[in-house]
Length: 315
Image (tube, rainbow, N blue to C red; front, top):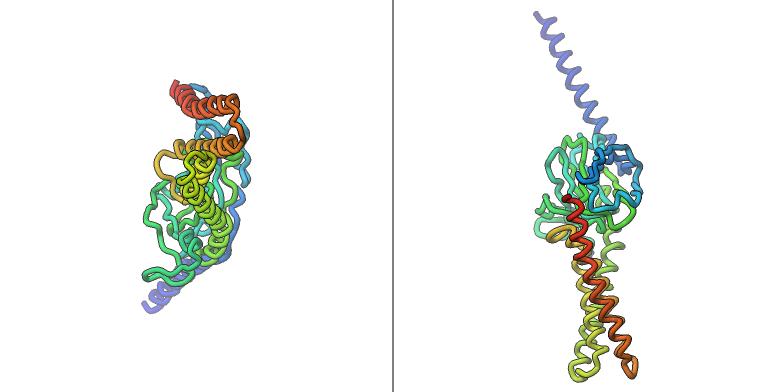
């Protein structure tokens, strides 16, 4: 009887040791930051194209041909995160994506960590938060801005992560750079990247807004000098663009978000041109007429292109 108990204890000890060794191996595999070199890319075409869906393994960064950068194509990526499935606190760092995207693991949206907010103020201290720590943003099911680096918490046991592009890519690439590893290792890398990508852009937007406000104040006593008014409008457009388009979350419809970005840049360029035209003395009426037509046609091109794209996709 004692031998049976001894054998049972030895067997239980062997099982426990094996489980501990397996967990230790999984933790060691995710002990450092590791780049995700490959992904599975799934392509779904609009019904009217009569093309079968495609699936292929791609190497990151994934350069997309021109025929895949269309509103009639839906692109989805799946990443293998099994190396960090048993890690106690693992994260996925997405440096850049070619379009607004959703990200989830096993049907559950990943939680965005608030490291971007810490990078902007330069201090990671909040209520109950120490220096260098991070807390969830709270919105875990949103659409994220592909321009801005993002750090997501990997839930325990997550072996695959899915990234769905919500619009056609604005750059000739889908996924650019993805890294997974321990949160305490990726957090400093992420904060440095956000400081360089977002920090300077937001500072420049603030400077441009100040210049616009000064131009507006100078125009008030000189209301006949329209060059100052157009300059103030150009600075306001560009400054607001910087403040809105350098956040992680995408407000509203992703396609509208991307189109308004292009419209904002176009209007800023046109208002600068108007400011220069009003600096010329005398103002050339032909130049003014050309600018009016150019402005109207440029703005009209956006809704026409959108209607044409939706009509084709829904045919």
